[in-house]
Image (cartoon, rainbow, N blue to C red; front, side, top):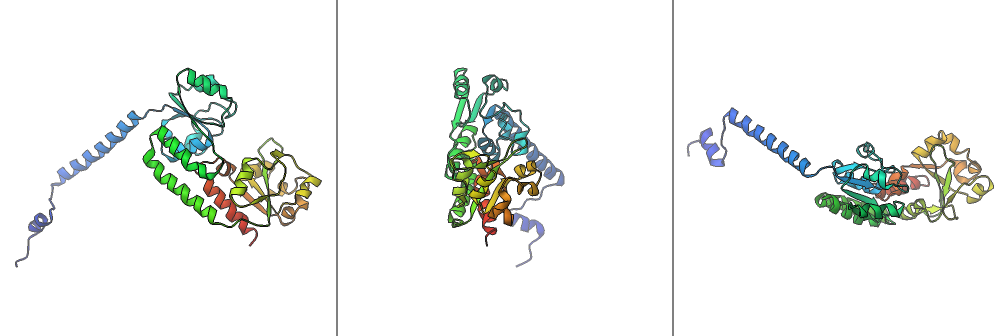
Length: 301
C-alpha cells in the first residue's frame, strides 16, 4: 500500500485545515460568544439581595453569588468581597429604615436577627424575606446551603459544597474525643474585658462537636479571675487570633488573673482559632472544628 499524503491523512481522520485567517476569526467569534454569554448572565442577575447573617453571607460567596448582593450586616465581613459591601448595622439591632435604604428586592436573613418586628415590617412593605434557621451543629450546614442556593438560583454549585461539608463532618466524627484535658475558651475583642465561655454558648457547642471538654461548668459567659480561675484548672486555652492581639500578645494572656497558676498557664498551652469560622456554622466551620481538634490533640501527644 502506498503511503498517504498529508492531505489524505487529514481527510481520513477528519481533520480539516483552515486558512490562518479563518482560524483567527473562529477564535475571535468564540471569545465574543463567551463574553456575550457572561454579559447576558450578568444582566439576567442584577444585584437585588441583602444578606443578614455571617453564615449566610459566606454561603452566598461560596456559591459564587456575591455579585447579586446589595449589602450585608456588620457580622458579615468575610471574605473581602463581602466586607466591601455596605452594611445595614448589627445583626441584633436592625432597623427597617436602614435595610430599605439599600433598596433590596429580597432579604436573605438569619433567624438570629433581631428585632423580630423588623422582619414583619419588611414583609408588610412587600419585600421577599427568606429566613434561614441558624441551626445547632455542623449537621445543619448542608440544609442551610440548600436553602441559600434555592434563593440565589445556585443549586448546581450547591451540590459540590454540600459534598465537601459532608466529607469534613465525617472526618471530624471519626476522631476520638480528647479525653482528660479540659479547655478554657476565652472570648475577647478590643475595648472589652475577656470573657470565659461556659455552657449554653456557641463556643461550648463547638467544643463538644470537636470532642473537647470545657473546664467552665457555669452557664453562659462571665469574667473569671483569681481563685475562680485557678479552680477551673484548665489544661489549655483557646482564644481567637484577634482576641490575642487585643490583649497585646501571648505574654499578656498569661497575666490574666489566676491563669498563670493553672495547668494551662504553667505549661503555656495555647490554641489560636478563627472564632467566626469556628462558631458561625457556615461553610468554614467544619474545617475549623477539625483543625481545632487536631491542634488540641497535638498539645497532648
